[in-house]
Each structure stands twice: as structure tokens, then as C-alpha cells.
Length: 556
RNA sequence: GCGCCCGUAGCUCAGUUGGAUAGAGCAACGGACUUCUAAUCCGUAGGUCGUCCGUUCGAGUCGGACCGGGCGUGCCA
Image (cartoon, rainbow, N blue to C red):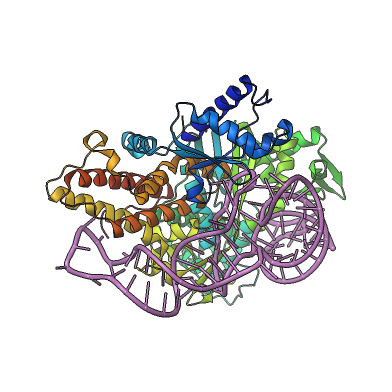
């Protein structure tokens, strides 16, 4: 049981006690809210319960608070002090002893410290990146990749069963365009005088692919019918590009459990199955020669075409079939991580989910705002079309995997991200990723020196825990013990950046403590106590960095 | 026009389910290395939380209007 639950029980018991003695009228205890006050003087936790009860009790909040506080003081609790303050807050000060003893959990759990079971083994599918195999992935995809990857780590840590998935858009118009682009490059390389129209992909990587095709198959596509050549070259290029995408992601520390092909939906008739089902359910109707999904029935602003007048299904049709497939796989939750430019599709997908008879909140969509890549203060243009872009791979090579991941994870995904390449490269105090890693390296160094001096790194039972009584030490301990709660909050809100924010704070506390206090001194008992504390810091920093997929270096 | 996201210190951003005196980093200024890692720390300065109304004991947080920025608003993907 966490400290919050313990305290909620305490308060609840006190309320019943007061009611029993006739001091309060309350019959049913309302939900008790516990907050962590911003100001240390207001205690470790604070409750507004007296203010909530005021109107029902017809008494001043402060007088109710006094009554409750008195009752709490009379009980055997983990509290050192209970105070009534302000308009009627009850401030609770947890005894140092409780915090000290809780360190044992960190030691005992080690690598598993921070994990929990709130996910109850529920099955969650999380789809991210899903970039079209028409070009290398760029930094925008990188942000989605980092967020999706870390989110899945976090959800696993709190007890969900996770399947990560990449949806490959290997069908539809963009494949045609890809094939055509490669074909034209191919012809150019073989000396034919053809232009590459602006609607084609312009990137140089397509010339590389065309060169490969020449090396493998010579000029044979000059004599095959255009349709066939384009189709073959599209397949060839898409495979090749997808391989490169996989490699880029791997270098970035991101792998997927499943690679789901859009083409497979067509092959297995899944598109027509899905649309037929919706027709039967009367969610699809015909108008102007096309078939429309009645998304307005679920609150969308207008109905959407699923099959064009020319008989071709739209991208939306594939997505409906894909999500139907996700539902059939029986997940308890489906998470989509999309670029913010796709926000208009959320009502559409929610409509599809509901049309298949599920609640729309089984689907949770995370919108990731754009990355502004800066180099020397200048914004770098990103467009696959124009051929000018900064690929994820280039960024990872330039700043390293750790810095890239950390930068992508620093901010709420709701906010656009300024990614300054120069800053991320700098090995200095301005660069936040080093700040955190340095904390880990420092702890490691202390432990190393201790061992070199023949000291055994102590366990809980080897030390006098009371010696850790400095305010800075208690702050540090409380922060360490907050870790599980941070992970849970991060999981429930789908906000991985909370981990980076937490890590930054924790590293700050540690650096401050380190600079003011020596761990290894002539005082053997104190040395052992502090070595223990520092070891706990190491565990938490390492676990947190592990969730982020960032290295925890022993030395820097 | 309509829809979604954002607006907090000079800059980049945190801010849990509404709580008491709004936080951090960078930049600026001033300090701390015969010491377990100075990739660090300490201090100073910096704010009408875009504006206005509302909800309430209490609003950066909830609601409405407006202003500013981003992105959507295809029988493209």
C-alpha cells in the first residue's frame, strides 16, 4: 500500500471516529483528496476535506479541520505532525522513519523498482511511425517513434501487455507515384531525355535505387510495358526503402512486434469485407456514384467517401479495415500515435470503431506536433517532395541516439518541438541529456571509489538509516519514492515527457546534494548511510533512463 | 468560415484530479575546483500565466467571447 492510501485510510478512520462521537454529522465519507503542497512548510501531503464538508456540516472549515486533526493526532499513524492551516487545510507531515524504511523497497526491487500492476494485464496495441515507404523517415517520424517506443515501455512497466505495430502504407496512389519516380530516374540514368515532374518524389535516394535496378536488371525495363515496369519498380523500391526504415529505427533503438501491410488487407479481401459489413449495417450509402460512410451519425461534421465513383477504395477504407482487424484481435485498448496534421481523422476513426459496435474510448489517439529542426538558428526545411529534408538517420548520426531520444521526449507531445542540433551535440551544461546521465556517472564513480578503498556497498541492514537526516537527504529520498507514482501518471495520461521532467528534477537534487555533502569521509557510519542513499539514486536514475531507452553510463 | 492544438520570465518549456507565496533550464550578472567526476553547484535578477467576462470558499488549471500562432478542413495519403 502506498503512502497516499495509508493516509487516506487514516483520514477516513478519523472521520468515522468523529462521526461516532457526534463531533461531525457526516454519514458517508466523501472521496478524500490528497495533494502534495508546493511549499515544504505545508507538509508532505495536504487535504481539503474540511472545506468539502463545510456546507453539509454547517460549520466553519477551520473548526471542522481542527476536529479531524485532533482525531488523527490521537491515532497511531505514520505521521509526525498534523496541522490546520489557511482556510481549512489539514497538513500532514510524514515521519522520517516512514520514508527511511521505504528505501528498502527500492533496494529489494532493484531493476524492477517503479513497476506496478495497474494495467492488470490488459492487452494494448500501440501503432506508431507508420511512415509511407516512399522515402526515408525524417525527424517528425523520429519524435513519434521515440514517444511510441517509450510509451510502450512505460505501459509494460505498469502491467499492460503491449503489442507495438507499424502500419505499412504499401498500397494506393503513392505506390504508383513511387514506381513512376523510380522509373523516370531509371530512364534518365540510361540516357533517356525525360523530365521528373514535380508530383514525383525528388529525393536523391531514388536515383540510388534506380542505379541498383540497373546493376541488377540492366535496361530490361525500357522494353517492358510502362505499367508493368512502374509496378515492379514500385515494389522493388518500397521493399528497399522499408528495409532502410527498419534499419534507421533500429539504430534509434526502436523495434516493432508487428509490421502490418496495407496491401495484405487488399489481398485478403479485408477491405470489401469491412465495407460490406458497414453497408449491411446501413452505415454506408451510395451517392453520386460513390459510397459514403455516414460518420455524421457519430458526430463527424460530414460524411466521408470510402469507395470512389471509379470503384477504387480510399485510404479511409483501408484504415477502416485495418481498425476492424485491430478490434478483432481483441485488444482492450488501441493507441494510435499520429502526426498532428492527421487530427481531422480522429472523429472518422472513432466513427468506424463505433460502427463496429465498440465504444469509441477503446481508441486513444495521441497527436504529435511537428518538430522544428534548427541548425545554427536556421530552420531546416522538411519535405519529401522537394528532396530537402533532415532524415532521422542523419540526426541520430550527428547528435547520437541518446541525445536524439531525450530531446524528442522532453516536451509534451501537444507542443511543437524546437530541436536544436547544435545544442544536442554540445557536451556541456546547456545540454539536458548529459545532465541526467552525468548524475548516473557520478554515483557510479562514488561507488567505484568506495570499493577501491575497500568499502563494501552496504544494504539496508548494514547502515544506521537515521543518519540520513539532512533536509536535502529527505528531499532526495521522497523524490526517489515518488518514482512509481510518476510512471503511473505517465502511463494513464499517455505522457512520456513526465519521465524526463522527473529525471531532470531528480538529477538536480542529486547534483545539489553532491556538491554540498561528501559521501565518503572518515565517519564510517555516515559514509555507509550515504553510500546506501547514493546507490538508491543510481537504481532509480538507471531505471528511468531504461524506460526512455537511453544509456546510463558508468563513466563520462 | 468551421474544427483541433497551443499562448506561463528575454528564449525553450514544466506545472498531477481547481488549492495556500507560479517553477526549471538556457541566456545575463556575481561567486565555488589542493575534495568521491566543475559535463556540476550556490547566489542575484527576471511574471498582469494572451485579453476580457463567468463558474466558486479558491482559477495558470473549468466554461464562454475575443486576440495571436500552428495544423486541418479532397472521391490525396
